[in-house]
Amino acid sequence: MSRLFLRTLRDDPADAEVPSHRLLVRAGYVRRVAPGIYSWLPLGLKVLARVEAIVREEMEAIGAQEVRFPALLPREPYEASNRWTEYGPNLFRLTDRKGADLLLGPTHEELFTLLVKDLYGSYKDLPLSIYQIQTKYRDEARPRAGILRGREFIMKDSYSFDVDDAGLEASYQAHRAAYVRIFDRLGFEYVVVHADSGAMGGSASEEFLAVSDTGEDTFVRSPGGYAANVEAVTTVAPDPVPFDGLPAAHAEQTPDTPTIDTLVAHLQERFPRDDRAWTAADTLKNVLVMLRHPDGSRSPLAVGVPGDREVDPKRLETQVSPAEVEPFGEADFAAHPDLVKGYIGPAVLGEDGPTGIRYLVDPRVVDGTRWVTGANVAGSHVIDLVAGRDFTADGTIEAAEVRAGDPAPDGSGPLELARGIEMGHIFQLGRKYAEVLDLKVLDENGKLVTVTMGSYGVGVSRAVAAVVESSHDDLGIVWPRALAPYDVHLIAAGKDEAVHLGAARLYDELRAAGLDVLFDDRPGKISLGVKFKDAELLGMPTIVVVGKGFADGVVEVKDRATGDRSDVPVDDLVELLSASVREGRPLPPPT
Image (tube, rainbow, N blue to C red; front, side):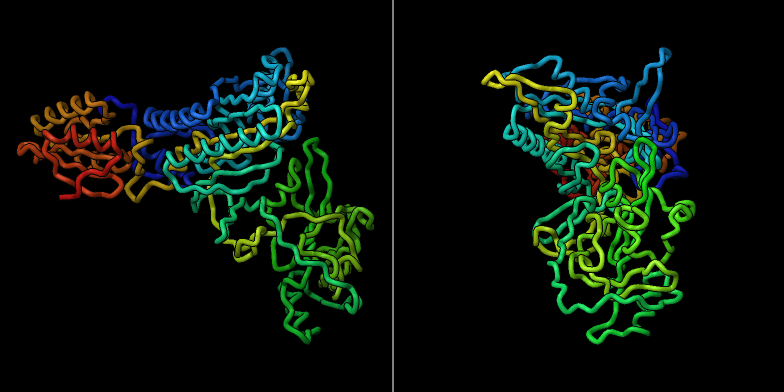
């Protein structure tokens, strides 16, 4: 440690929001360069290399071969797939001295596709799986949480190429099994959930989420085993209700009721029901937003949801991607004078309505359901407005919030909500990119067929932070042995020269036995308290203290995860630690 390029910090970085950000910076694993951009220091690089090694081992175990593309890429392939436009402001664009448009790669589907097209032309060349571990770039609007959500990050992306859908399914399952092994080895709790394919396209899609309260992704799971990212949850819609016998819609004065709560209170007082009390779920809330499309154009959208639910921004954004969602501002209301803020109803909405604004409703708004909603007149609502009889939407949209207790789409029980960090995402891309870029091979009958593809990503740099999120305590990081930069943190305690010489001898012996050892040989002016604090902060799995007991032939061994301490004879130390690291068995019980 006297020569290690390291400076630990006492205080948390000012912008730290999550434990991994706070601890990785304080412990000297990474250092901020700019928002969302970090340098990797020696300790951090060692952990990153261990993650990469695990990923490589499991990818090669399924026959995938490693390649490496540049990060600086030409515009043309992304123009062909339309992602030059669809990626919008998230894409880092630049122009070289000759005026050619370039980008920093956010992901490399196009380049992989073109590489295979360039070299392969027969079904005999397939199946093929190739991968890279590469730096990616996305201009995140709100980079946060250190290396969990950066603008520059390291990702493993692999792609499978098959002649037919059966081959794609086999490649997909092979990658899925490899991912299970990767995340088992990384050592944090994770779930595999159904996911939305988003801008990637394709059919089957699953995410691997590290379970964490600090995660940005919300997912759901049921007692019967259903699990999905909240954006991919589908609503269990009620059956349509017959119109016969339903009362006619009638507009009523409802002054000073611009919110759902004030409306429900007014209904209770002025229009009480015979069967039960009014609730927010009886109301239909119509939310206006503006969509900004990749070409810069804007268009309005109205979303109707039951009044007891909010519109979930992430679910809405997923549904309208690649467009971005913007608030419906005062200028937008001024451009649509038929809209009365706080009292908007279906009568003025819809592509065939007075405003021409597209109107999409929650799947719960089925034919025959009765609603209280705006009458498009200030201080007035319509009661007993029946879907399918009195109004018809342009379609449905999965934009309402998902709540704990909602039924699972597969009938496996009520949903519970949790949070996670997206660590991996696998897609059955199908023929989207192969068709755009004309990737075809001759089949066994000599006929040209379009290749079908799969795409599989792992957040390699993000994995370092995800491990810390799940493995830390009040004192610092607690690395699992498979990822720790060193197996042993060796401390020479005190100023006794014999202690320092003995610790140096143990350092050499442990290294000769194949262990990675971080030796705190800093001079006596560094207090023992500082050395202990640094050891806890840095988080190596085993801490060995050579101190006063060394004269009696004993050293102290501490397990960082459990805090257990043992006095171990010096002569037994190398064999004990070697076996513990090699076999993964615990250290002796505390003494």
